[in-house]
Image (cartoon, rainbow, N blue to C red; front, side, top):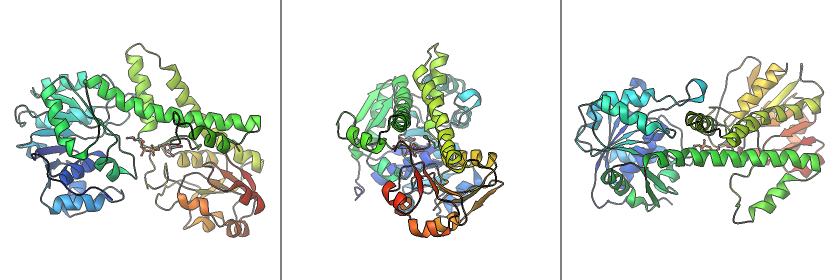
Length: 433
Ligand code: UDX
């Protein structure tokens, strides 16, 4: 159960610029607490969807949360940013910060948003950057604000949302990190979040920026470590699943983010790790460990494809059934999806891919889409489990065996019961087992 809406000590008017994933979740969360939220969205199609009561992001529970805010009159949408910030006590910037050339984060949408509100802000209303920005960005953003004639305080308040758990993440955050030089502005942003009951870390801007990138880089490193141990387990004849079980009971280690896979993907980890490496370089600092993480993660795709070619001899003319297209289970998001990267390598090696995913889709020459697992497996020489959708753990192995031409299963998520797969007559190859 999620907490019910509580009236905060005093309600504020919050502007949120950008109705993407981060902006909409932020807006829905603040409205749930009781604040008045004015969302600025410049893309006409997205705005039209929102105004018609639609929700342009696919996230469990988000429709209800957002509609409750709109229905209760606490969320309004605005085409022009000056309208959105009119009368706002605080302005959140939640525009995209994609990867630019050379792994450097592209802040141009932040700059455009700032230019659009110069001269329209209430004096003293803090400008809060929710978009992911690497260390050093606050100084650049401060200069851009000065150029746009915005003397208001700047606050960095990074978002830690995980896809598929955004509602939980916004209503019950593990922590709220707020950084800035103006203590009053930091206090105001802290007060907005107080009803959530989460620990609040008040700090300077650079520390807030670094916290976000350090968190994602740590988790990406942990996954890469697990994949490296799985690789070693194969060479020393160990079972990585037993090793991970043994590790996870140590409270200093814990059991989260210990699943071997084809490498981390998604819209955040790959981009953020590279961005931290670049940001460090800009300060003359070589983050060698994270460079190795990036390289090791990229190499993991080759290891998975290598298992297919080792099992099939040669991929030319073969058909590979691929279960999963999304970058992880529980989402239709395919950004930096390891599954798609695997499909591209398999296609390049001369095979056909027949893919099934419960939510995601992709278009590629030589890639066919199937309606379910068995259809994907029909006539296939090998089956590849690429995404950790829970339903793949319960595959009907007999039905799959009955329709496949070959017997190879490459389980790049270690989801299947190895013994059951072998008993069903498969040549089962997981990671590190
Ligand atoms: C991540 C962070 O968790 C979130 O805090 C941040 O704000 C954005 O980036 P998300 O991209 O939704 O969130 O994905 P996450 O669930 O963390 O998974 C990232 C990738 O790591 C996926 O490709 C996933 O399959 C992989 N992964 C995760 C593993 O391979 N093994 C694991 O044990 C966990």
